[in-house]
Length: 85
Image 1 (cartoon, rainbow, N blue to C red):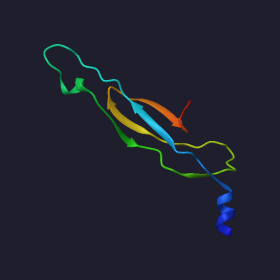
Image 2 (cartoon, one colour):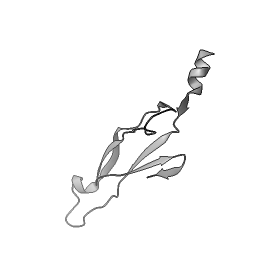
Image 3 (tube, rainbow, N blue to C red):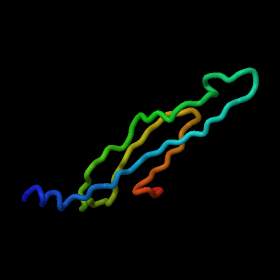
Image 4 (cartoon, rainbow, N blue to C red):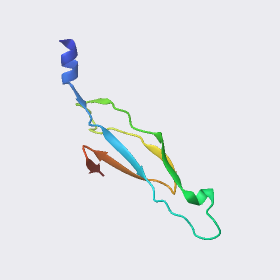
């Protein structure tokens, strides 16, 4: 019973996804260097599934995402199959 009361005061944030995209390009000439081949994205930090109190005073949550790629990645956030600004 106590567990149900605790759960009733919490809201589960929908799975939020961090997408990192990169555009691959190459230079034409006397060959292609490793740097020009591009790579990634390689995720170094991703959001974790967490439960946040519904009564949050600020009404905000903070999620972190970090990736590396060449060329530099562009980050997009999505929630419930929709874009988040």
